[in-house]
Structure formats: C-alpha cells, structure tokens
Image (cartoon, rainbow, N blue to C red; front, side):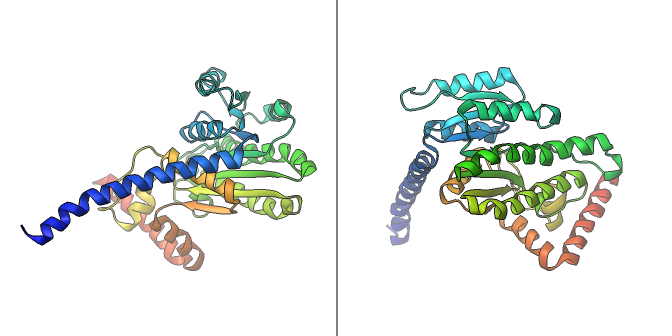
Length: 308
C-alpha cells in the first residue's frame, strides 16, 4: 500500500478527533467564563427577544446571573422567561421582565425605575438593541430619522445614564454596547443608520474615560451583522463585499461567546468581523480617498446592474 495513502488514512481520524476535542474544550471554557463573570450579578439585557439576546440570556442564566430581560412584547418576554425558568431553580434565579421600547422615549423614566426596582442595582448592562433602515438619504423622512436616533442612540444612552448613579455609588459595574461596524465606517444608503451608530460609539468611548475612576468598565463589541447563516464570499468583487451585499455575519452564539469573554477580561473594544471589513476600517482611517472611491464605485456598479 502507498505510504502516503496510509498516512492520510491515519491522519484524517486524528484531525476529526482533535477538532471535536477543541470545540468541546471551547464550550467548556465559555461555560466556565460565563459562570465566573456573572454569577449572582444583576445583568440587564435589552432586546432580549432577538437571537443574540436569547443566546446571552440562556448563557447568563446558566451561569447564575440575576437576569433582567427587556423587550417590546410582554407575551414573548413571558415565554422566554418560562423557558429559562425550567432550569434547576436551586442554581439559578428566575428572570425578571421589563417592557422597554427605545422608540418610545417618553416611557424611558418609568422603564429605568422598574429596572432599578428589580434588585436595587445593576452590575452589567448589555445594550443590544438596534433598528436598521436602508434607503437613499433624500427618501428618509425626519420622523424616521428621529426614530432611528431614538432606537440606536438616545435610548441606549438614556438607559446607561439612568443606571450610572447606582454604579458610581457602588464603584462597580460594566456597560457593554453591542454595535455595528457602521459605527466605524459608512456605507451608501445607510446615512441615518450609520450616523446613529457613530453617535452611540462616540458616546460610550467618551463615557469610558469619565467613569474609569469609579471602577466602572465600558466595552463595545462591534460586528458586521448577526446572522444564523454563513455566506459564501469567494466569488465576490471588492466593492460588492463592502457595499452591494453584506459582509459575512456572525452567529448569535459566536457573538454571545465574545460578549462573555469581554465581560470576563474587561476589554475596552472588540471587533468581530472578517479581515476585509477590518481592512476597510483601516483604509478609511489612513487612506480615506481610496475608501471613498471604492464606495462610489460600488454605487455605480449597483446602478449599472439594475439597468441591465
């Protein structure tokens, strides 16, 4: 028998076993991190009904956190709470539920008071909510612009400011913003969305320095987008990857694992993205004219394909 073939036959099972072992150990490590970082801590998750929100809720609930789940639908929050409550009550706390809609800023004072009334304090605040719109700038109404800013900037900022006095008085706490990579670069036809993401990124970057003396951590976890399906990018052009189609997203469990690690090691900033979007951020900073040219070429290419 050919020695090369024999070696290949022997190596394949070894690779499979090693790969399976790696993923098993990775899951064990993530589980341990979730337990050590949030056990007995009061953790607030906004938009807990989203894919990422549910993933975080499940991981933190198993880790022994005192969860406060926020969302727009009381019925769906109750369903999520019931699902989590099926876990062993001797090692977990029943989650508390709060109706929270960043699109309704008038309701924010009441929602903040309800969040603080649950346990009297907040240890970890995960700001996960987001509203997306894709359209030419001149087609967006002022009302829609304001709604986007409320959901993506004013709402998260208001909630953070609402829980900060409690964190400052206790000299501990962690604010974690889940943000889009469009808080670092801009893509055509997402003017107000990108503006809101830049605004909220700047707010928490400024806040990080302000609250450091009180022992409060501020982290941002930036992603391309949350998706359950991976996309094939092998045959796409440069600008189609950056513009006409979204870059490859991250799954909710991948993003949740990164959030757990960030809470544990208290990193200031994490970017979850393939190399191309990261390269686009660097290009925007150091070679802005090149970035602008690529974006403009993407618009022209999209127009041309639509006319064909």
